[in-house]
Amino acid sequence: LADLAVAELAPRRGGDVWRREAGRTVPSTSSIEADHADATVHVVVGTIDEVPVGYGVVHAVAMRDGTTLGRVTDLFTLDGARGVGVGEAMMNELIAWSEEQKCFGVDSIALPGDRHTKNFFESFGLVARAIVVHRTLDP
Image 1 (tube, rainbow, N blue to C red):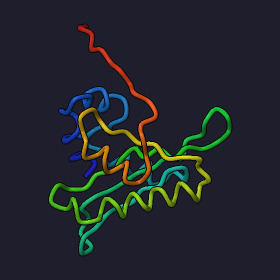
Image 2 (cartoon, one colour):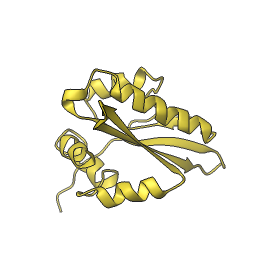
Image 3 (tube, rainbow, N blue to C red):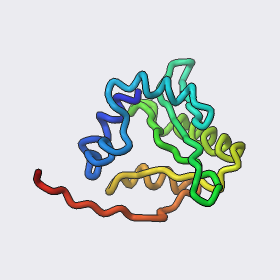
Image 4 (spheres, rainbow, N blue to C red):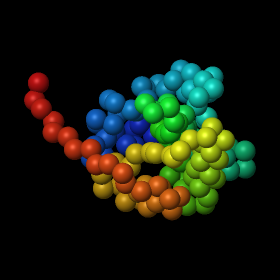
């Protein structure tokens, strides 16, 4: 699922830099296993009839002032399983875990122009707090 998420996002506007900076290396099995073993990370799997159709990952990130931020780094549902509540259930679990970790907030990324993802996150109360600008340079 993580490999499919990278394949879907990488070609989008902003996706190449996202892939280089925050995306998982493909194949992603070892990085997902490492996250699952890390106590500061929570990994969830979304299922329909016990068949995995999505996954999500949130990290408890220590801030410079000693507080903790929940950072949703992965949230993906297979195209055919979207719109039926799997993503919502996973996001609710990621937020609940972040609250248990005493995080002061939850962040994630929506690529430019991805209105569906932006609207999805906004339905959970996440709003834009920064805009990252970029210029590609020729080597």
